[in-house]
Length: 432
Image (cartoon, rainbow, N blue to C red; front, side):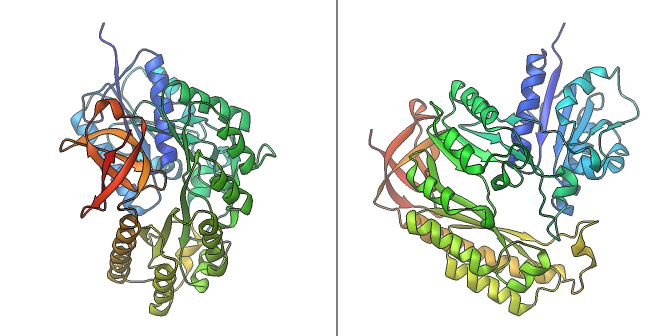
């Protein structure tokens, strides 16, 4: 009898990727064969995102595409869009299961309960049910693993639906996170990205602190590198900065959401800091890690954002000079306070402002990468092969390319960094 085939289709954040990978391992342990997303499958699992209207549309289009390609396949949909709009998803042709985030870990069991295709079954999509913690980490797909340590958010920013889709902040105990890190090390992966919705808020449900987690993970043998995926500026404490600066494992790489360089707009967004406090956190990082990679999230076109407000944002970012900008046009999400704010902007205005920040990002990222030309660094090479080259990253996330050598994949190599190309990739000469 042929084994049943399952495919996974993950949209959105690193959290979703860690969860999809964990679900896939359960299917494989149950005798299913995991196939590529484009392959014919008996079960198609879609782990959705709902951060913007574009993300919702992308999810709907993907589901329809899967049904056209595999009309007899069971389609199970979970994730944030499933949590927020379960009936909308259930109404799409081909959908059999809609499962909210709280019971995402029960997806395998729900699939086994099905006897065939039929009317979609909707499970656990009420907001009040978001209390469980689904422990997850990614494996097998790449050199680095994503380790989920925290879920949910208590911040309730004016533009965001995450607290509706993921619930209140909660976490797994430090000891459990360490045990999962040891599993990752045993599988041979060298790098872990610590991830969550509001990662720095770790400890709400266990009374522990994020710094406790970092110290415990630092002692796990076999893991050579850690990265913190994203941390709110008000939670990036001096203790965390000092620890990362002193640890040989924690990389000098910080992803810190700003969202606006205008204090007036930050207030409308209900963010928990000012530009002065944000700048102070950047200064604290650079004081101890002057060559740190700093990535910043920015939203353009928030309701009421004037040209003067945008000018303040542009000037603040130019002055702060991060290594990279993640730029998002404002997307109105039903049920959020931002819906009722006056001063809605035309999409063309947001697009123009976004393009200006994209040009700034190109310049800043190029400057950051070019500083490393002629220096030596350590690079963890990945399995991707393109044009006879392999690629990897330095600790502070400069991308490096070198002639493909299978023996170097998933190893940290000492490299001399050479010329930078138009994509800001640095040529690497392996020295050991």
